[in-house]
Image (cartoon, rainbow, N blue to C red; front, top):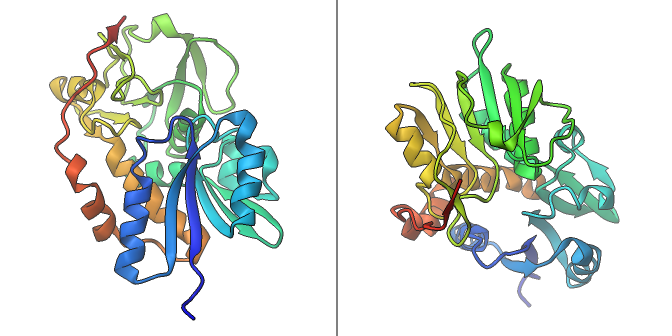
Length: 272
C-alpha cells in the first residue's frame, strides 16, 4: 500500500479566489510528497465545526485567511509569540491533540521591510488580521505606526489612531500599508490613496490583481511597491516551517502563480 495522503487546507470566506492550493500542491508534487491541499469555505461561526471535520478526515495543517485570522486564536492549544503579539494567526498544525498556531504574515513582511531610520513613520490602513501583522512587523523594525480606522479603537502596536477620513492628511509616511480588501478584484477600490514619500515603500496585502490601484499610485509617486503576491508566496513558504520544519521551495510556488504575474488592474468600482 502507498503512503497515507496528508491533508492541508486554506479556510476563509470568500475562499474561491485563493492561490494557496495551487502553490502548495505544486510544491508537494515537486517534492513527490503524498499530500494534498484544498480550499474550505468557512465563516467565523462555522470555524469550530469545519476544523473538527477537517481534523477527523486526517487534516494536519491549514492556513487561515479573512475573516478567520483572529477567530482562530481562542481555538489554539498553543500560540507562537507572533500570534500572541498580533492576536492573529494564519497557519496551524495539529500536534499532540490540539492546534498549534503561528503567524507567517508577520515573518514575511519582516523580511521585506528595511529597519527604520530615526523618526520614520508608517501608516496602516485597516485593523484586521493583516493589519495586526503589519503593525507588529513595523514596530519590530522601529517605525512609529499610525492606523487609519473606520471605527477608531486602541491598538497595542499603533503610536496613534486616526479616523478613516483623515487617511489623506498631509504627512510624510516612509511606509504605507493597505491591509484592507480594497482594490481586490470584485471589491471596491478608492479614488485617492495615501502615498509614501518618494523613495518610500507601499505594501498591499491584496494579490489579485497583483498590481493594485494602490500600488500603481505608489509607483507614480516614486515609491517602491511590495505586492501581495510576493508576500503570499513568502508566507506560504514559511508555513512549511511549522508543518515540516523546513522552508518550502520557492520555484514551484512561483511557477504555480505564473498565470497571475501579469494580471492587470481589474477593480473599477471606485469610491472616495
